[in-house]
Length: 326
Length: 259
Image (tube, rainbow over all chains, first blue to last red; front, side, top):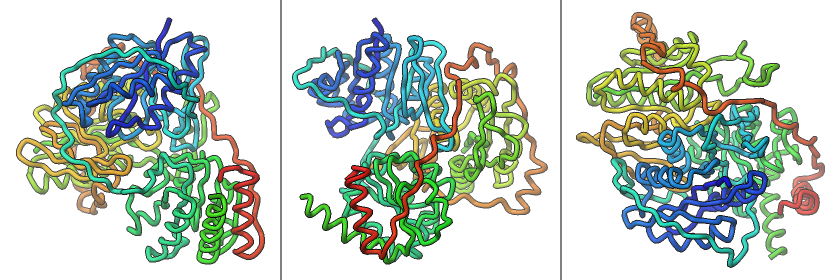
């Protein structure tokens, strides 16, 4: 019987949603692969997270619980995951494609000599082997990728794989492990940059602003619309490069690639590198006064109009809608 | 300070992507090739470090003959020398094989203080080489850096994560990957472009790096490529702004069911 191993990222003792998405996907694949599911959790005081991973489908949880593992450190965490791979010999290893996963997975792949496929948006089993689908050129094309040999290691794009239904009381066996916790690079402090703000790559709704807003002094219109929708706020490269907003808000090929259920583009013309970062959104709304703007080619709903007139009306209407909905 | 910068040549981000008939890659004719934007941040950071601390900046790029123009761009910005890793076996390899070739070349340049890369190669978007390199070279790593400050034998690095910045401290040598926000890359001056023409680019193949065919055998391969499914056709919402706003909310609720 084969095994699918997932890395369960936690921050401050809480499992990331992307970690639960990875276990859910492992559970879905386990039937066609005839495999069991195990997760690896690394940190301090994290053994209690095994129950939640169990409820989402882990049959076993490898726990590396050590006070010295409280803060993420690449070398120590990589040793733990590589240790679990060496012990459990999985045929598949799934890691969330988060800031931590992006940092960790390659180091582990080099330790394990494993082929790694990054930023997968779909996985399928063909002839008993895994096949991954991943966007390339920031979504301007999709590549089907297969592995030679095992383990078949993949990182999964957050917000794409759906969460399974947790089964309360479903138990996972806890396997305790320990590793050398030394690391030459360490976190000395963490500063929240977006206190209370939603992270773009994890948001279900994104409201984004572009050059049509004419100046940084008008960007608040987009922020207010975002608040009304409970959305994360993004921006086009043009306004980031012009210094209106921080680059962390940039959506597109040299910024963040996002796949929310709803993306509202305000005054964004839709340069090819912007479309590359958001055209996998489920529903796209474009508000622009230029009817020839490329953004209308990818949108489900379009409003041909002035952002200065339409956006405030939409903010007011959304506030009323969500207030009535309660 | 000796800093080694890994440079990847990629299609311009405005490139319209066309897929080869056999479906395993993109059509490269008419592609405008550029230095991957994140690698430009890495080159710029290396130049600033040299300006502050002295030393040298060495560029390495892996790929066919065309990557020499990416190396010339970096030399024109001010890098001192460049190494071009060129071998038919490199063309067929994956990220791990690429990292093995880069690691072998970097070891040949020892002693060095720092290896800088972009946080990802634009286009393939794997984000793998920095971590692979660090492990293969047995060095610490800090990825997605938006600030790097060198101190005695160590570096203080600010790393971007979801909704936060982390302060890291690492011993040197280390592998650090550059995120947008690290700096504003300079343009090459005319003088720099002229000087770059006189700088030598050393070419090395797999044999020169003692890399066996097994080490370069790809562990992953693209079996098919396709363009994204076409988006459904648009529905334009008419009327004055107030009724447009209300109609949009109705459609998002009743038709799309996303709110």
